[in-house]
Length: 415
Image (tube, rainbow, N blue to C red):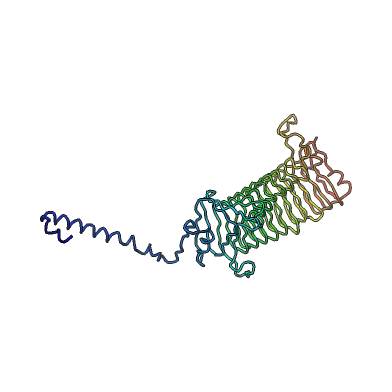
């Protein structure tokens, strides 16, 4: 360029010098943006964001998470897997792009789709559990020959949010001793061959605002503590809705449980201190079955057109309060109008060889075969008071003559 400078007029040379000067200043101004501290990731405490779309496989992206954790972003797309994905780091968020991120488990040997566990697997010691893992916003499907959808083993503060988990050969979500504070919310759990959400040995559990559709059982909670099951929709399950065993201090409230072929709710195996309240329990094979429950309350539920036993208190249960519930068929107005035909089997309360039960403030209307049915051995120390019976036969008066049931005067039978 210098050999041409002598050809420039003074005015042209001045203009060229100005351009060079301005360009140089612009380059200096832009230099920190291109190679400054942000590009070197020198912010104290910062961890990388992993874009799984830049890796050859989803597992390679999960393996790239540093030991201290981070975030993995799953891109939109359809991803076939034939062996389980394994996530084994704490403080991780695995997040997709909603149902546009679809992971399909094509395994036919009964293997799960996603396993979240300590690097030591099942040999991990209790003190070494992983903490704070979040799974969010992606779709996970399987086949009848694949295994569970998600298996989480000994993960504390597991958070499942906005997942679609469908069509797995095993459970949809299986949380195995995720002891501290598991949370499952805003998820769709459907068409799984076993349990939609299987909680084993968990503690302080929140299950809220989920939809369960046509699993074998919707939810099972065994050997746990403090389940808070609120605001969920459970529909069309091939067996039972909610099964709770050996679990105490729990509440089921504000749920809709409809058209399960078995029972809507079962309490079994040393349950105590649980409350079932303000639920709509409609058109199931049975309603609430207290098989082995103590110190529990069933209150303010609507129990409509149940095929058998809207509430059953079995011989293994006692110290039960049943109050403020509505036991009904599909009557919707004067003149005996019914929304459904052949619903005379809409059931009431069954007491089967139980004891220490309060039944008060309930309405029994047009249920069959009886408002209160007695089966098995006589029930003892039962208070039946302040209930209203409309168009329904009942055994409660019969029990009174045996001395096994106390009936308060305010009970109002009416035909």
